[in-house]
Length: 109
Image (cartoon, rainbow, N blue to C red; front, side, top):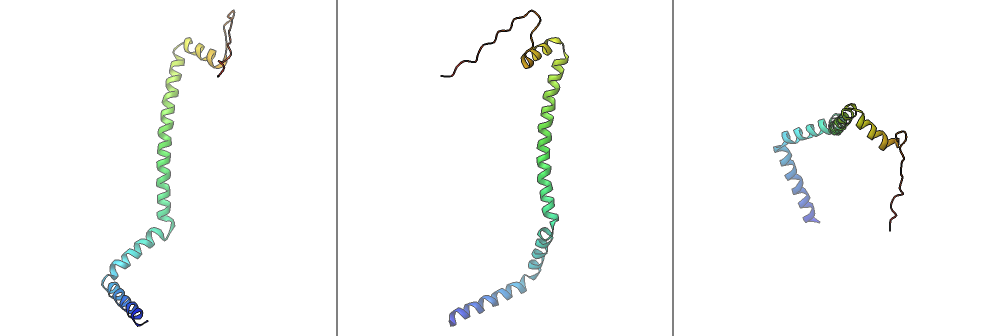
């Protein structure tokens, strides 16, 4: 038991000397930890930064979709041909006097 007590006492003495020599750094580090993690400001800043990144990527995707839709609209406004093709394909319209042939999809084996 004497050896264990001596080691504990030695540890506390070395800790006291370390604290005495580096008290400024310890206090500064504790203060910084308190400022960054002691209130919700830093966590809120990090959360807002992550949301900003997510919204930026969403904006890029929406701008890409907007360009695609604008090019489709431009094609549709160019004349009746694209509109007719689109209406026939999407809505299944046919012209007067035309006969529509429908074939069943091929069977899977």
